Image 1 (tube, helix red, strand yellow):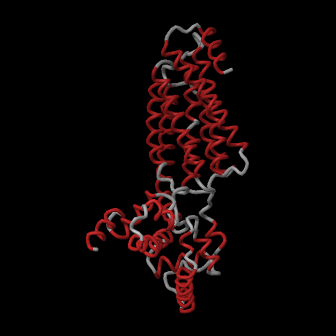
Image 2: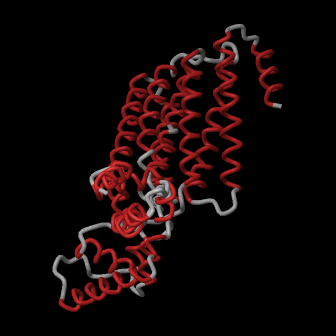
Amino acid sequence: MVLSYFCSTFSQYQMKDETTILAIFMIGLSVACYGISSEQLLRKEGASRLQRLLGCVFAWWALSTCKDLALYIPDIDTKDVLRHVFFIDGCGAVTFALMLMELTIPGWVTGRRVCMMILPFVGFLLLHIVITDDWFQTVFTVFFVGFALIAVGIAIYKSRGYARAIRNAYSNLEDVDISWVWTIVIAFAICQLVWWAASDDYGGVADTIYYASSLACWYVTMHHVNKMRPLRLTDNQEKHKTDFASTELSASKCNYLTQIGTQLEKLMDEERPYLNPELTLSDLAILLNTNRTYLSRYLSTELGTTFYDYTNRLRIERQVIPMMQEKPNLTLEYMAEAAGFKSITTFRRAFRKLTGMLPSEYMTKKTEHA
């Protein structure tokens, strides 16, 4: 069906330029991919907030990209038409901003905030019909760049808090870490530079590169989003309101923290919950019959560590190193999995942070001293 559509399109437009045909093909492919992926994400049972948001983003990109097919009808790509397209395409900045905000501040995107973010772009869309001077397009460009920079700046600032929060709540970060997003941001920035380069002259190689790179960026984003577990980092503050924000603790609170420490050490010795690769701070708090706020406070103030570093230290000290000493013939992959690590990369990183050397170097050193 898609192939026949392309063939009829080529025949209707009577295109002879191979680069133009390639651009049209890329537009059609992008529309199909965005549309299919949007439907799959929005209809997926048990979809996360991020997946539903990405489904809506893909729906926008399917519609926005579809309109570009009309630009290849002979004699339609006039200056006025290209100007309209420029303002419509600029609204795509909202989709980038929404994904960045939801990634770095889980639960941030709401209907009201989406409307507030879209409102100035709608204003520009309406005003550009009346104000046709070139200076207004320049004003929109400045606004577009400023909007994007502010969104990225906020996301960078909030990502630091996100990183601290997940290290205080999860023992494995493979499916909650968002460090990958900054590679995507840089790639999208390059895409936008290509878009600006092609915005005055639709057709040819520049358009093909833009559509292909944009599609690749969004699909890499979808790959990571589909791997992420649903989470809401504000649950801790919402569910467990305490007065631990003060720097000085009362004697009763200090005693309670000491009691948590005693219970925690006993639990780790007897039940070894750190061997569970999916262990979270909430899980551990339930086992201790306390809440996440108190437990997190004990780890940070009494032990000077995060939940992530604490559990990984126990995995290495109480599980991996004894195995290295007693069963040196075991593979590192087996040791890592047995200790509760979900990937060999995370295991190596945690081991080096704790001991100052890689697992292989540690085993070699132990063999030489034996």
